[in-house]
Amino acid sequence: MRRFFVDDITGDSREVLIRGPEFVHLKKVLRLGEGARVSVFNGRGLELKGKVIEVGSAEARVEIEGRVESGSESPLKIVLFQGFLKGDRPEFIVQKATELGVREVVFYTTGRTVPDISGDRVKRRLARWSRIAVEAAKQCGRAWVPDIAFGDFPGVLALYPGATRIALYEGEGTQGLREALKDKRGKDVAVLIGPEGGFSVEELSEAVSAGFIPVGLGPRILRSETATLAVLSIIQYELGDLQG
Image (cartoon, rainbow, N blue to C red; front, side, top):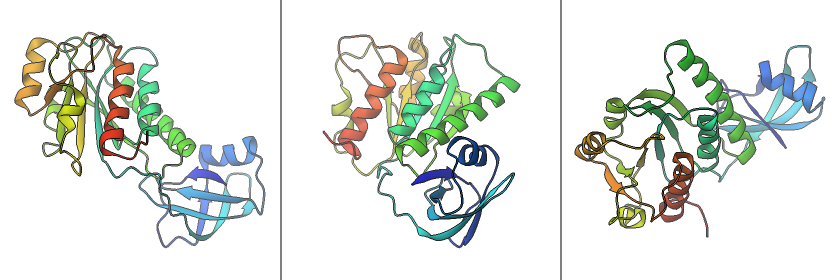
């Protein structure tokens, strides 16, 4: 059953209109017609199933038949604070973080951030990243689409103060991630990953003062996006729903 993102549906919806890019995908790419069974989700955990009853020139009408009870959402809320990366690597991060069950991704800049991004470029990037998150959620079966935001280093340090706070640091040789997660089941987790150049000593000190626990992943120095996937996978395995 094909899935479509419609953000204004509610639990009381009896008929839903699919418009915009989702309609183009339904009609031009998938070539679905009347009678096709589909589901629609709002990105906040609600998914409904139904039947296409009309395909017009700009919208498709879906008659809702009931809810879809999805078991794909992780019981663990993970928030990713990701140092901004150059090229298309932020898109890769958004896609894979969505697949790994992350609830929110906040990109941020530091003194060592390589790309220069501001103003309208941030707005355009956020819009693109949000679309990528929607597509990733459709593909992996999630009914929840992660929020995507952009900020600065001091700003992210102030977010989610009650969560278990982890900062990946390549210079940490004593405490591993598994040790830091011990006895933390049932709590939200905020993960801080640095930019390409890593954290400065001053930035790491600020993070520690804000309650982040520095952890290492072993003897090899990983690229930022590789470290992100490794950390998220380990956290979901230890505290979430990733099975070994």
